[in-house]
Structures are given as structure tokens and as C-alpha cells.
Length: 136
Length: 136
Length: 136
Length: 136
Image (cartoon, rainbow over all chains, first blue to last red; front, side, top):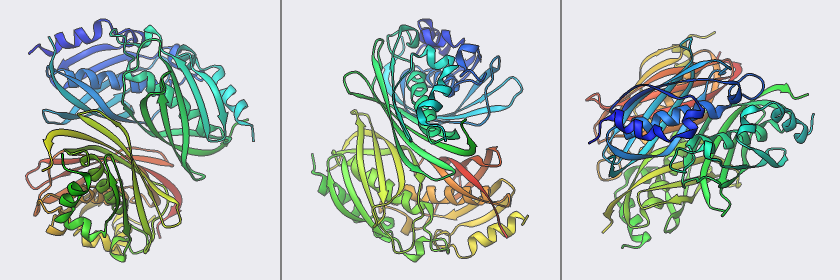
């Protein structure tokens, strides 16, 4: 089985949207990842507040990386997010994953997004289906 | 109370991220909107498939427009999305809102996203809190 | 493959909790079912209002029946419900399923619960994992 | 403002369904509660496995108690639950609340349900609307 770093490298290499978002991998291991991103003016709605899609996109990338890190290709089947604090231009966001549950077919992740002041800005929950295709 | 068109115009005018996404307003009335967008290469992950955050962002904009169209400022409190079909580069997506329930404090919306072949690509559900501040 | 009626009969025959809830099967076909129940005093919280768990239980049964009706054993992986109107003692509730999406591994259902006055009291969304074991 | 113990006592005193479920209050403070219940044969589906509605009901009660404990009347607006492990007859379930976020209008709770072996059987997330009516 490929190791998590190589899998995520493959996932990120052509990922134009993650690049546009400035998503940076801080840490990755099986079932876990930590991502970082910098909120730019283009991600905001004109009132200097980030669009809800920005936090979701960051969390969704964290879900993809964490759930694929075990070596099998996994796809999101259901996700939810609560936005609990405004995200502002120039904020530095961190997404951190927790694998709540995993069988060989499905897995459940909680992802918390915090800003540079360690304030929690969004709570994300995601369920994936795990296929039997491996990364190679 | 301002009419829905004027409210949405105000919401969109400085919205940099919606512009980047090419979101276009097709129809708006109280509790309802229809949006359209064109999936570009920058929104994909390098395998020509759109990032999950793209559909979410479109749906989240539809939620904001529909829930603010009544004249009171409303904010998202909880949202969920299921991605049921791959979204490809050059797809034309349409988001359409249905107001499932509304009190003077909270409201619930279902938003379905379809592609140019009328295939449903994502199902979104969103709850908002309605403040007593009006748009003006 | 067994037909939907026989599968649901097997699922219901020893189901003590569904019996306690007075759940009654009104209609069943592949990917669809309609259930009915009568809200009794024991299901309420003393203010004559049904506990949120009552609507959830009815919807969860509808999810199980609809998703197993195709002949393969399916299990719930993620569910959500919004309670939009009070359910009172003596209400007659109907749950009706819509299959939003289905692959051979996962499926997504929307279930709406209405009362005897055709007022919608709850909106439920459920995702299941479909195993390759058949009902027999 | 009434203290949390007295509020929960008032909420539980006529609650027929919580009694039927054998729900027992273990601990309560502002924004937090711990509940316990014993799974009986009547709560199962005949295969000695608890109906999904049982865990949901326990979590929904925990949500109600935690969110009302601050002294203002709060109602659930959106809830979700993932069932991650089978619940069997005679299991002793514990629900524990975490208040993830709170404003004066809405609040978000995570509730984890574990069995007597400290295995997590369900993950619940709930959003409430907080009214300005106080408990008295």
C-alpha cells in the first residue's frame, strides 16, 4: 500500500482548485490530516467576509485526504457543515481531521476549522464510501 | 420592504467569490431563486472533475439569496450536501431552491443542483436564522 | 430476488419497537414506501407534544424499508432530520419516501412526514450503504 | 435564572416517552449533560438490535436538556446522527454533550453515545434556536 504522503502528493499535484485556495498540507498520517490556507480578497463577498464555500472547500479537501490516506480510494457520500464564526480576509485557517469511525466500506470524519487566534470557525462532519481500488 | 431583485443585487455587487465562480442569477422571488454557473478548469482537481466545494458554494449562494429575499437579514446555521454525480469541466450547473418551512426566526431550504443534461449532481439542505434587521 | 412486500414482511415480523410505535405499512415498492402511525400519550413529553425521537423513528423505519426493498441488505450510514411543526397526541403521521439517488453501493433518500391535515411536520434525509447480501 | 437541575426536573417530570426509554439523568450543568439508558427488548427489531430511533431519542433528549440548561427555552432546528456500531439488547448507553458554539440566538451541540464497553455507537450533531422566553 502506498504511504499517505505519496497518495496526497498524487491527489494534490493537478488539483487546480486547491491551488487557487492556497491549501497547504501541514501534516498527514493514516486517517488524519492538517491543512492550512490563507483567505484572500477573492474568496470574500465584498464585506470582507469569506463565502461559506471557502471553509467547506477546505474541509472537503481534508476529508478527501484523510479518507484516502489508508490506501483505498474513497469518495464523499454525505457532508455537513455549521459556520459558527465569521471568516475574514487575511485569516489563516487550519483544518484538522478526526476519524470517528471506520469499517472497510464506510468511514466517518469530524473536521474542525480554526482561525489564527485558535477560534473555531466551522464544524464539519463527513461520511465516505471506501472502494476496493487502491492508490498506486 | 425592499423587493427581492434589489436585495440580491446588493448582495452580489461586491461578491468577489461569486464572480470568480461565474454565478449568474436566473430567477429570484420571495423564498426562491435559480442560479447558473459554468464549471471552469480552475474549479477542478486535475482529473477534470469539479472539487466538492464548487457545488457547495453554488448551493450556499442560492441559500443566502433565497433566505434573504424576504427582506430580513438571514444567516446560515447548518447545511448539508450529498454529491451524487461527478461534475465535469465545462458543465453548466443550475441550482434551484425550495423553501420547505419558515417561521419568523428560522427557515429550511432544499436546493437541488443539476447539470446541462438535467441530471441531478447534488442535493443540499440548509437552515438559516432570520434576524430582525431589514435590508435597505 | 425477493419482492418488496415479502422483504418488508420479514423486516417487520419481529420488530418490537415498530409495533410499539404502531407503524403500519401503507404502500411499498422498489425504492419507495409509505408508512402511517398514530401518536399516543406514551410518545409525548407531558405537554402533549411528541418527542423528536418519534418522527425520527418513523422516518428511520421508512428509510430501512425503502432501501432494503431492492433485494440487497442495506444499512443506514448517515441521517438528518428537521422538525418543522409540533406533533401532538392523537396525530396520524404519514411518512413518504423519495429515492433521490442510487448506485450499487450507496443510496440517498428524502422522507417527508406529514400529519392528518397534510401539514409537513418533519424533513428527513438518509444515506445507506448497500451490501452484496440479498434477502432470502 | 433557574438553575439547570430544576429546569431539567421540570422538563422530565411529565415526559412519558423519556420514562418509557428509561432515560436517567447522570449529570447536568450549563451547556452540558450526561444521560444513561438501558436497552430493553421492546426497543429492538427482533434481531436483538436496537432500532435507530432509540439512539436518536436519547441524543435528542440530551440536546434538549443541554440547550435549555442556560435558562432560556430552546428548540431543535436541525439534527443529524451517524450510527457506527450495533446497539444490542441489555446494552447500557451513555450520551454525553459538548457545546461546540453558542450565540444568544442559536447553539450547536455534539453528542456522543457510548455503550457499557466504552465503544462509541453513535455520533449526533444538533442545532437549536434559543428563544427569549425563560424557564420559571
